[in-house]
Image (cartoon, rainbow, N blue to C red; front, side, top):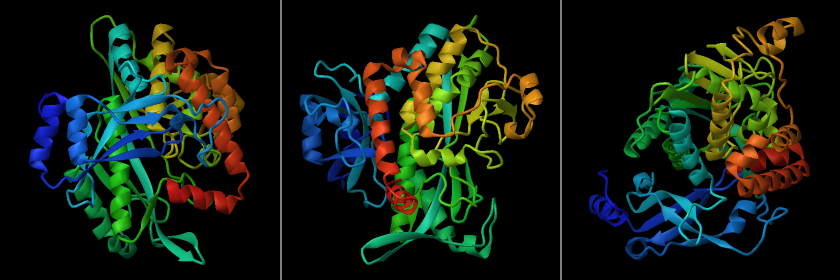
Length: 444
């Protein structure tokens, strides 16, 4: 769309999409779930004209999986939802009757809400450019597993859609899914998302859709739209798409790999390697955002192509936490679909900017095989010294002990995030393994 004010932008969109009846205002919780307020289109147009936005309680960022306030949360206080009209799209499967739009959360004075991850990421992206002379591009890989839901006696179980399937395969079973897979590609294109490519992945029913690069906030908005579109189209085909990181201990896991590159925006900027050195140094705390559930840590293992057990990097090494692709282009392997990606990128930018400020040297590589298979002497020779957390409790402790995130993300986000994650951990640890898996598959 052209550069227009919100009222004009909405008018242009509504003219091109005359069947719109409802607008979904969306923002993401600390739990990585999408929260939605639905507004009739006439009310939405009036809201834009008057500047009176829909409000939501600040408690939304303190709710545990049972919608109970986590420690430190208050039932008082509100924020307003400011729609970002650059993100408005017709919802897949709505026949053009529903529009969806991402929102920022604002304080009463119109400033970004201290609790809002999307606003925080935008601020950090600007800071990277203004203070250090770098821009960032991000591209996400969407890995999903398609399952067939079977409900009996009120309880739903999920079964793999096929058996004859492997990485980049095109078996008869895979061809049976082509109607779904191609419908997803078409649906994403209609939403303005042009896929780089897509292919079968290693686990049963698992596929990967590679999104194009964009600025950090745009990349997360695109990721959310892509996931919602995939889920909706799968549902229309009688299937369920899940982001669960490890539904089977004997099959490959499901990640949300993050491609991150930085580029100088002015002469005299520092070596971009320092950016990634900062990420290596602060990776244990970053995992509290990128692997945010108890079950996330099933992927922190050697031999799973998920990033391994140590903070390290390696040229085109899929067993390294950071796979190096170009001089200033790396892929973070240790991230999954339970995460709030606005917070993941905020943590990565925070660590990267710290590395640039400190002119850190990039160590802990080049690792050419799985770091867990190296001897202690080989790891020491490469500078690989940081073992990664193997549990959520360990990564949360690392986050609490790392002061750079408190100052960069702000106390409001840090306090609410830690409270919610600890409440989630208690909730999920109280469930048996199968019930926990089913609960998470149904929602992610």
